[in-house]
Length: 308
Image (cartoon, rainbow, N blue to C red; front, side, top):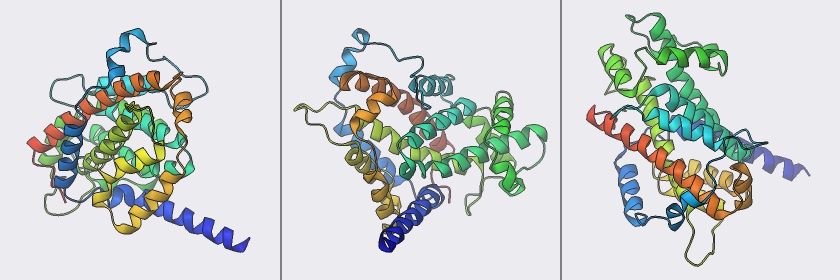
């Protein structure tokens, strides 16, 4: 019994460390290999899924899936709102998209859900920067001014900061970059907790989730489906793993082992079968792809893909 408890404790420590390093260290490495891997994956998977062609004949996205915290319709609405303006990304719905993706990860179980804690902290950083900037537009507000309590705020401040982003300096990705550069918040030689650098971390994590959902939506020709655990691990290996240490990669493998079976995802999005699941997930993947590509373009234009 003592051995089992020690093993369980060791696993918990590993997973907690994974959640911290997932975005703290793992997403801070150079981007080139991640983007190259993304392009290679896209070249392999350019063939359209046959289920997409029949989308009009299948049920629409449910407005609400009873009994589920994560709602695919809410995620889609936020993603579409984030990419409304041409060649830009609106930050308030972008962050709201992450709120819904966090619910998605937490629905997969406590082990996978541990990863979401760092994503919450990153979205909170951007929201608090937006809120402080809105209160004092001329000040050079940096992450050092954010208190521990303000960063841990997950409800009331989230609504207030979201409202400030609608018209403030942090309204969109381009406006945030323009303001942070002008105020000296972005340093190209040392690490800073600016909104721009935080977006980089979220941007890389979004690629991992996009690829996982894309793989989960695929219908293999022979009808032999691989497990979500295997698909998530493969998506991770093609995106984030190349930037993680051996220790973090092993911890990630342990988290993915606990992922639910495919039938769980049917219930999660109210899909009757794999064909309907594919339709729903392909819509999500397409919407994520627009936001991801738009973010990539804006960051590249401003020379921010190599921020330390």
